[in-house]
Length: 163
Image (tube, rainbow, N blue to C red; front, side, top):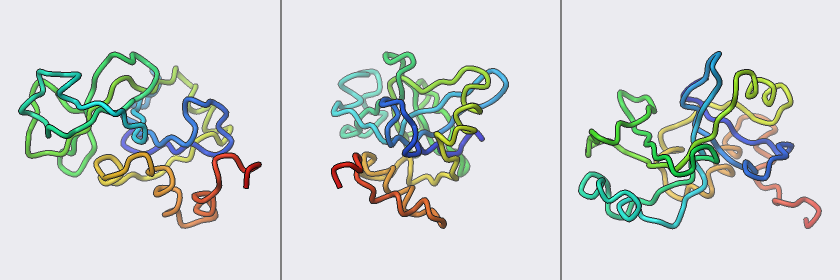
C-alpha cells in the first residue's frame, strides 16, 4: 500500500483527520506512516529550515504532515516516477519536493482496523496530488475523480446539517 493515498471518508470521527488525504510512505507488520497532503501551513520552508535556502524554491511553504513528531521534518520527492521520501541533506534541485512537519502514524494493525471500519479509502495517487497547486482543495479533487458513487461526496457540505 505504500505510495498510495489514504482518503478520509465522511465517517472518520477523528477531527485531526477530517477530510484529509494522506500519502502512505511506509506500511508493514511494524505499522504504517504517511504525511497529510492537504494541510498547508502559512510559513515558508526557508524561514523554518534556513539550511535549505538555495535548495528549495524561496516561495515554497511547509505542510502539516501529521500529529506524530510535529517538530520533525521530512520531505517527499519524485524519483523515477515514484513518490519517495527525500533526503533533505542531498536535495536534487531538478526534482519536485514537498516538505512536511510531523507525520501520521499507525501502530501494527491499527490502519487495517480503520480500513475495515471504512474510515479510509485507499486510492492510487498522482504526482499532481502531492505537488499540485491548492493542496487545501485536494480532498475534493481526489474524491470527485472517483469512477463510482464516492465522487458524489466531493460536493457534500462539511456539516450536512447546515445544507
